[in-house]
Structure formats: C-alpha cells, structure tokens
Image (cartoon, rainbow over all chains, first blue to last red; front, side):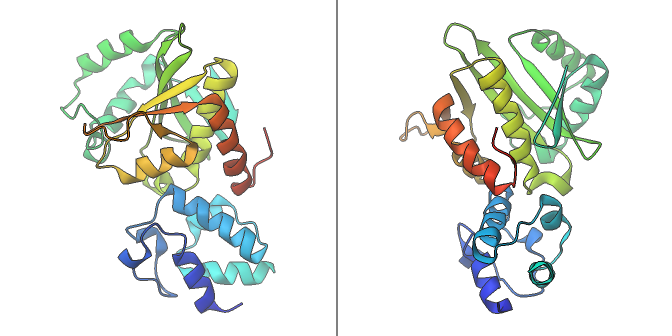
Length: 76
Length: 178
C-alpha cells in the first residue's frame, strides 16, 4: 500500500475534493470539506479498501494523513 | 431519564442545566444556524423550559466520554400523526466533525421510532448549512418539496427508511446491529 494511493482514496470520499489540497502532512480536520459524514465515509473506505477498522477516536486524535496511513500500516 | 446507546448518553434536560444550554445556544457558532438568532436572556430561557418540559417535547443533554457536548431533541410530538421534529447541535468543537453526531442522532432516532413509536420525523434544515443537509440526507431525510425556495425547507424521515440507513451507518461505525 502506497501513501499516494491512500491520499487519493481519502480525497475521493469528499463531496468536492477539488476544493481542498491533500498532502501527507495535511491536517484533514481543517479541510473545508471535512464533516461528520466525511469522517464516516473515511472509516468505511479504510475498512473496505484496507481491511482495518478504525475507531472514531483514531480519526479524531490523528492529525495528518501520513499519521493515519501509519496507523493502518501498523495494524495490518 | 437517561438513555445510553452507541456509546453516547442522552440525559433529559432538567432545570439545573438550562443555563448551560443557554450559554451554548447564545454562542454565535451555534446561533448562526438557528432561525432565532437574538440573545436569549435568563428569563426567556426559563419561559422556554416551562413550554418544553412536557411529554410533547424531549430535550436531551448529550454526554460523550464523560463530557456534556451538545443538545438533541424531538419536539412538537403529534400523537395523532405519530410524528415529531428532530434537532441536534454539538457544542464541543473536538466532536463536531466526527462520527459522534451520528452516534447521537442514532440514539435519538431509536428513541423516537422504537420507544415513542413515531412513524415519521421532520427536520427544517437551513440552506446555508450544507453539513447539516448532507448529514440528514445520509440518515434518509428527503425534501418534502424539491422546489421549496424557503431558507429552511422541510425534510421528512420515515421509520422504514431510517432503519435501512441505520443498518449501514451502524456498520460503518463498527457498531453491533440493533
């Protein structure tokens, strides 16, 4: 699994991904399109694409996409 | 009266908590999405509580991870039509754009459809609040009139549609089937 692919998969869950810039060091909580629904969709995407079930706490307390990617990697 | 489900607790609003709610409700980050945006006084809040502290209205303080984080309600319950109007706001920023509002609304809606045996819930959603709109659509709310040009169109959620959507959301949240 590559970080770049993960970032693209993450961006794909947003209603309007072009409205935000997604990088490994992006604090995704501050993106304009970030919402409760996006959080839910990301949890579903991670479960479906990577077979890892994250908790709401994981999402809330992880600051960047790189850190989220690292959590997924560490649980595989 | 308290309900705990989906790891969140709904505690029915009591008079000793109405000042906390007034503080939340007067904060511009909350009032900007409300139809009534004037400053609510102590007296106004007391009068409001007297109006809503009855079996036609249930207002709940939301408690998550031991913190009071917001308010949820079912109001104006119509026993004849088995319907009522739902509402929710999260005051604590750390839980705002997270899965926690879904936990809260699932607990509220289960109470409405399973305990109160409502057949339908209603919501008026401000057009300038796209997050609230997408949140409610994800729950299964449908616009009553797609051509409604008012600033706060009416949406409806039936019991049947809600249960279908609940199943999917609960799975995303890693929650057991209800």
